[in-house]
Length: 398
Image (cartoon, one colour):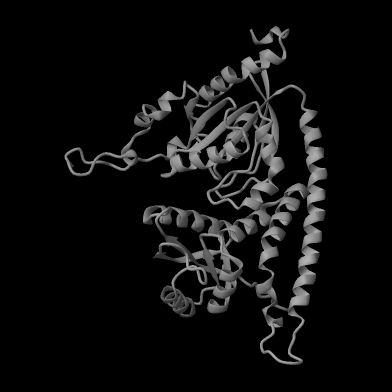
């Protein structure tokens, strides 16, 4: 009898590298690295250690200073690290220099996000979008893939085929990019037709930062079974479901979550997903209030909403995960340190700028099904006038 040994899948050990500069202080840098750690875990690697350095601007050759890079290399050799992940997008020359120095696989934030997207893409449309973004990312970085064909010495007879091969590859990739863009145009037309076939029904789009609970809320509102996980970018494909609130039929769309430092080529690739948001009548902006930087998340989403000209649509701000919210305790006898937003309770938050939102703000817990009826009521109040305007002779609403 032949015994088969099961090979245990070993997770790649990764180090995370960031920079502290004027526009990104130490606290913000740690927040970004926390997010990068979550991205790394989602991608299937194991974050081991973080490295940061205070610099006015990144080193154009190696991102960090040469002394710090030597320290990191010593740590890599000592601890048998498989992967180095940088928090910012690296230039092609930086990537080439760092890989030569570390003699191992090096990724930046963009490449990591693309990798997660590639593993999560389910439909032909999502796969095409990701493939296009990957090719656009690879194109300026082709040189480092052909270093073994570089001309090492000058002189007669030493001119290698490196440049010729790179030019060939560049042409192949440009052709593939052109074909994928044509394919996406065709799919965009199909999806536009699908959206037009939905008639005059009032459309509601769930928007928000990644991993705030959009899919969980979608499942709750529509009683459907959309994939919802505590991972970044669990949703890549837009899901549309029909729901009924009292006598009002609505179409609800679950969209891709946003993230800080989102690569520009990804925003372009996911144009059709954002079209769902553009063509929506009402936006439900979901916010994870239990996250310590939720105000920054709101700003990030609003920035993208402004870019796609959807910021002025009727919207309801939905503060989710109130069951997981905790505030830092503050000693009332402490006269030196003032109370900050970190010490606010939910009730105190409700009395801040959130109170000026003309009632279009609700605090819920999607997992605990808390205040869901209040959300349904607010959604009805916002969507009913739009429905009445489109169907003026339909008396069911009154």
